[in-house]
Length: 305
Length: 203
Image (cartoon, rainbow over all chains, first blue to last red; front, side, top):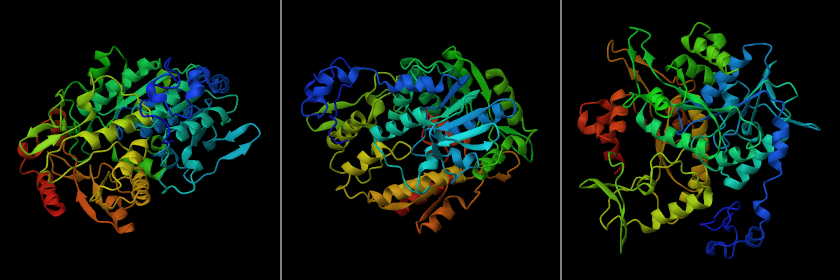
């Protein structure tokens, strides 16, 4: 894709094909004719595919390493704790697909049928789809540029067969605001996403990136469900003292929620048991049913449903 | 680095980085943004264009001993571009940072594979957020347990150097937030001593 000009105005721009940067681009004629600015018909197909799903949530973060996949997995398990609910977790983090590992289904294969790709079931009422299932080797780097990643994301949205009885779809995203996020926002633009849950740690350098994430949601018309603060506190198992490992130099997640008039969904403490369960792919909530984190997540799922 | 909101000046010799000490300067896209709150929603080609500009136009002076390049997470457009633009620049190597737990190690394997595919030598693996020492009772805890060997296990597996461990330290997090120099504020911290040793070893 080295032919794409560096100052490409974007195929959706009014100036598409007409800027000086467009000279020599193989798509110039297409853009100048206005053909490229016609909305991608896939967007409507995707909206149709997802229309029967009662609730659709995006899990976003500005920064990497704040625990987005951990939160996505906990959230999916929390919704699925109700045996009447059918829940799905979609992992579109193409470069670092952690969800198969965290959900204990690493190495599973995806089957194709006439009705589409079948997600992998980890419980009777909880299924998972991830690019991780499509890779030959979990050790191989997925070094794809934007267009190829976008193509795969589009395929996920268009071709996964979620069944006709799905109550909740949770979409785990890569960190930041990048090609993948633009594509996700575009492909889901007619799919009535219920909203985004933004995960942060308490410290300023993380909050800084959440501000950008909030701005991104506003620019792409994604409603924000609220802000969740992860790695909030550590309780020493020995002496029971509590410590802010990532001090809230200016108000943390709650301060930010107040500033933007958003809902503060709560705090998840650092818990080595949670980290271990993610590594082992076991369900933290059934292993540690009395943990404050388990109770907090079950309450959150009730609130969001 | 405590230089938020600074501006970059252009001159005939290129863009001037921002000096935070007499002998330490910084360049970041952060200096070029109108608002730190605005999302930078750029697709690959535009980001690559800016990365190329940084490499071509920043005036580092003619007496620079060390250049450290901080990168975004993952293996993506930016990383491909960085590897391509620097392919003739004799990079001494990559320092790969991980936390101890498997879901992080999983992604480090990909990063190692990326470096091999793009011919970037690997200096070694650094394990961050390794341990927490309770300030009250002094017990040590693995907050992100090394389900399978952590960073050191991985280094052994790939025959790479294990550069060491940095513990979780709320003071370090605060200094990052405040933009102050952790190493001068906490000169006796094990982390400070470890980093000074590392710099000596790498130089």
